[in-house]
Image (cartoon, rainbow, N blue to C red; front, side, top):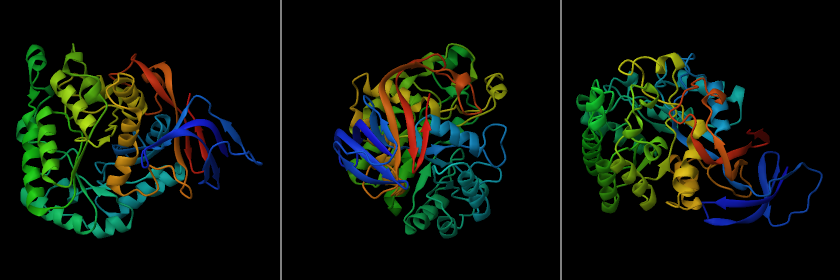
Length: 423
């Protein structure tokens, strides 16, 4: 195929300009202006932009074990509909992805569905019990790209030290769910004015910053690479910023909901706003945006965490934490960061593509390069659209962003020689 008349954004080289892209046998074979068509499908994408395929380094697909919430198939369909060509599912399934057999099952299931980049993240400890470290080398040999007990913070610092040494010796990385469970236990939303007004038990912001602080001390002691997931608070961002200045090899991510809405949007007992970490204050939201702007936060990930609709309609105290994130991520990011003038398009695309690929060493993703497999997302930067949760490909058709007016939408995803058109 030949993609013509588009603007190309390539964050690896900071290139931004007009260029045609020729793809043969699933690979990019030519990048140039005004390529003459041969006997091939010509796709005119005038007025749109081509970027490296979006990469989500933090999502939950629920299979095996919780297929009523999401399957690998519906998760992949939802991701593609959101413009993603690569996803990294977390290990908190049933059974937990802490062994080669379960890991191989998930990879094979994904291959049956699509050629999407599918890069599982395995547990750090067996059964998330924080007692015995998994067989890292075996899991890496079978496709693991990183390790995380996401949803179950590692609070045994001895285990964390040993795991960090072991995993870094295999040139891999730990992704941390940084939370002090004694401060977060039983919490429903952010601790503050809204939790007091609604009479709900809150989760203090120091549950995150305290965990980040002690984990940074472990990294100072042991060295190696370390990544902080779904950062949501001003104080945690300040700690990570200082650690980077000191030269610690740490990276961080946030999710679109932490720079799009706050606890103030939660005017009633509605569990569609219930996420972990919780939605924070306006001051925290502004700190997240500042962290994205100055590079303290390297990645925008979805933390796609689907649940059955009836679960999210339960009383908020009993409802599970998590929202569907794939299909609103790009629109929220472009609307709230690019169209608002807070960040450049290049900066944002880098955090959605090249940076997560670089952190996880995904050589095939996050780049537009001759000779490489074609993983591309075509975006209409200015298309205005309204979020309709009923049209999600995910099984989780409930969202705090339902009815939001957004600007910027993925229109096509190319995964090797497969073309997915997005409505």
